[in-house]
Length: 339
View 1 (tube, rainbow, N blue to C red):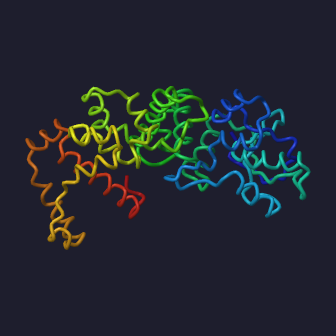
View 2: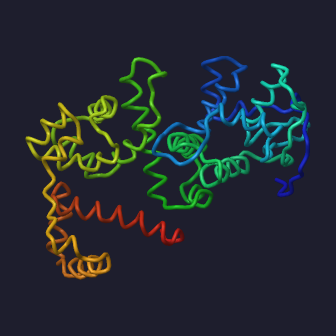
View 3: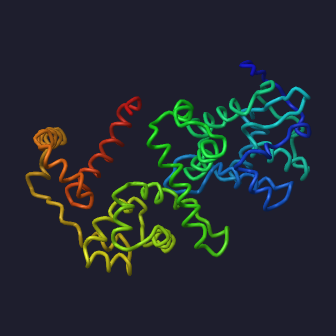
């Protein structure tokens, strides 16, 4: 492949949408070979409406921004094959909007579009561009769409995890959890819905939380299935979604479990709120708490650690896991280079 690229203004009617993109292909199968710009946008997940995600814009705001500015600021990325065909690698929604403006004879010059053009890229290089643009770049896909693409690359293109980590950064375990969460959501959540239109991608983070071994083990140990979990997600019994991690404690307490199944996790957790909030702890500084916790953990014996390992549903084990999550999130913010 060539590592060089050129900046060009391309004739819109000569650039093809990336219909082979796995995230568009299924949409085309449903709606025909000429999807609308809105359908392309939804298929890509560019601007998912997940209130827990940080990336994306709505289709309408993107379209109106392009109209107001008289064009796009960020060029699309295009691959030029040896026979001269031009296919979008990144920027399908923006190209679709230009096509829509031309069809509707919108005021402005929409006949040409700025593009970064590569010559004869192979599939691996195009995958790398998509990953860098949407998984770690400024135009992030929503979490479900990221997971869907990762699942495609790993399960269908057989891209090894080490290469995915090289492209995306982060930890292998995070990518594994995303891919497993996507699989579980497709296997257990989609079948319980009346139609695909009811599929709510904003519930994806609940399936990421499901990948905790303690959560999966607790669900099965108490006689439930992952299909039951999908119903809990769909019925909003699990809300907010991060309460998935509390499922082991909820199911282990008879009163909390009954409340959860009838009123949801939020109400069930009120029955489990036994954390000690003494005046001395409330008044302690973060430094004092960190120092005391570190000292306490350093004195945990091997036998006690094994006991906690063999009792993943215990309050102490779950408290330690919660502490680990909070520390990991804070440390990543303080020093993003830490894995």
